[in-house]
Length: 77
Image 1: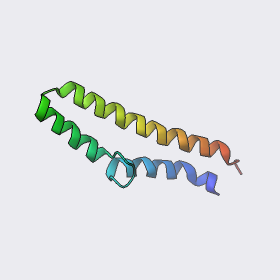
Image 2: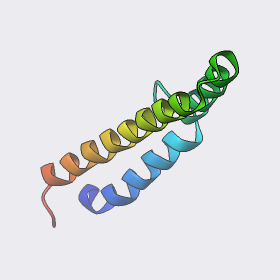
Image 3: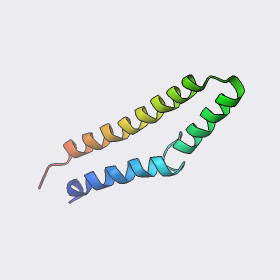
């Protein structure tokens, strides 16, 4: 039964990461805030947003990868 719930659980984890800082150590709002702060201090807009995007993408991919491994761990009923 847990195996059947994993895809929905994965979607919820990724949405939680996007919506709140409780989902991970580095959350979307904190990444966005730091990128904006870096923009105003250094005027390096492209570098700040590119770094924030790469960190965000890496975290989402890590969550998806972990859930895919969980799906493989539990047999399908």
